[in-house]
Image 1 (cartoon, rainbow, N blue to C red):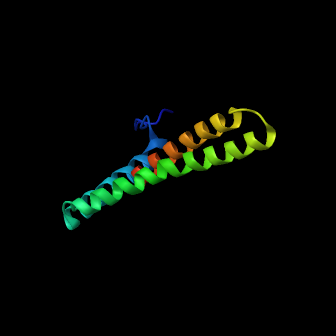
Image 2: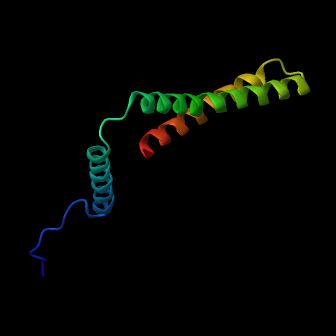
Length: 100
C-alpha cells in the first residue's frame, strides 16, 4: 500500500535550515538591541581582520626564510610558506567574519 502523505524532498536539510534561520534571527535581534556600531568599533574590526590575514603571512614568510637560509634553497620555502600563510589567513578571516 502507498503512503498517502507526500514526503518532503529535502528532509535532511531541515535541521541545517532551521539552525541558519535561528542564527540570522539572533543576529537581527542583537543588531536591533545594540544599534549601529560606532566608528571606533568598525575601525577596530577592520584592524583585527587585517591582523588575522597578515599574521599568518608573516609567520609563513619568516619560517620560509629560515628554512631557505638553513637549506640553501633560494626562495623556494619562502614562496611556498608565504602562499600557505595567505591561504590560512584567508580561511581564518572568512571564518571570523561569518562567526560574528
